[in-house]
Image (cartoon, rainbow, N blue to C red):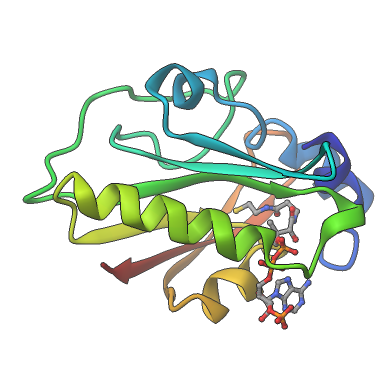
Length: 156
Ligand SMILES: CC(C)(COP(=O)(O)OP(=O)(O)OC[C@H]1O[C@@H](n2cnc3c(N)ncnc32)[C@H](O)[C@@H]1OP(=O)(O)O)[C@@H](O)C(=O)NCCC(=O)NCCS
């Protein structure tokens, strides 16, 4: 996660934005506790991680303010895709696409008909390639410097 945040965002953000983004990205242990977080290994090495959630928090790590663990209603709410990171040595090998498809299948099996996420600029190409559409552009300055983000969603 650390390497993905610092290396893979460089084409999209300056150093101060990358530092700021650490406040709003990273590990959310709730996903691990819920059993909705995946690790992909290649030859015994960690290649990537990411997951989904049936809880209200749309994005952020354990350190991020304003998280909300309320359970979503599959009949009314969109499931969340959360915390997608690929190790810089393993990008463009389909790791992100694999994790997204695992997340979508699991969310669908629990009755969700839509999935939503908050994308970084680095994440947008993966999500667009996987059928997600942009709903809203915004910035998050809770880390001290405004970081651009995109709310995206997809029907399941
Ligand atoms: C976003 C991220 C997880 C993508 O992971 P990945 O494992 O490299 O993605 P995939 O290999 O599954 O890519 C699938 C498709 O998405 C698109 N895509 C992914 N990364 C891309 C990039 N940097 N530029 C252009 N298209 C890209 C391509 O269409 C790609 O298919 P192709 O390689 O056959 O052309 C990774 O870049 C990352 O960790 N970024 C930094 C952390 C981050 O911002 N995470 C998102 C949080 S919302």
